[in-house]
Length: 120
Picture 1 (cartoon, rainbow, N blue to C red):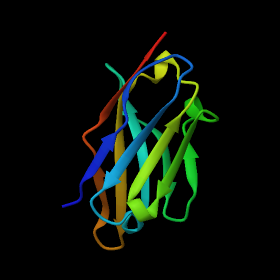
Picture 2: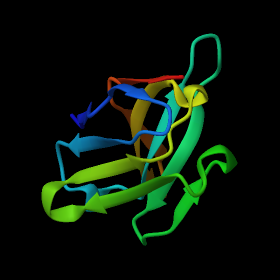
Picture 3: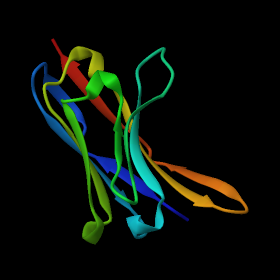
C-alpha cells in the first residue's frame, strides 16, 4: 500500500513563505511523476506543479516564479517551496504520485492533504 504523508502547512501572512513536504512509503524513483494539487473552498482541485522521474517540471501559471518543486530521492520526499504567498493561495494542498504501467494504465495515489492559509 502506497502512502503519501504531507506536512508543513500552516498560517502565514501574505508575502511569506512555507515549505511543504510529501514523504512516500516507497522509493520515489518508483513513480513516473509526483506533484502537488490544491483545492480551495468551493473550487475544483487543480494542479499546482509536478515533476517527472526525469526531472521535468510543470507549473500552473498562477504560481510560476513563486513556487518550486524539488525532490530528495534519498529521503523519498518531494518538497514544495512556496514564496511570495498570496491570499488566493489559500487551499488544502495534496501530494500526488503516479505509476504508469503499459497494460494496466495509471495508478494514482493521494496524500491526506495539508491546509495552507494566507492572511492578507
